[in-house]
Length: 53
Image (cartoon, rainbow, N blue to C red; front, side):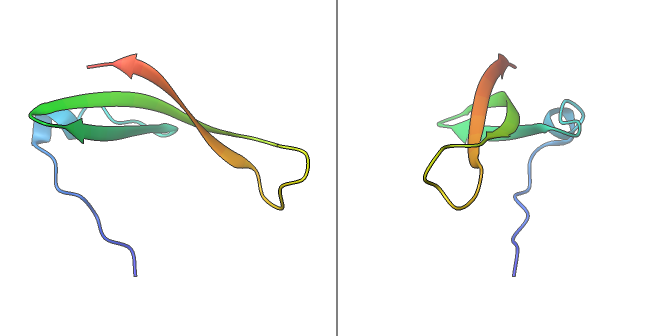
């Protein structure tokens, strides 16, 4: 079961495919979400790159 986080409309407008929103305190942060192959791991590991917001 996957739970969707509820963010304000203006925050959801910034989110596009390949990005994720994280909330820390009262601030929202936009990250580019990719994955990278790591030798010895069974699955690719997620990599978040800060974009802003």
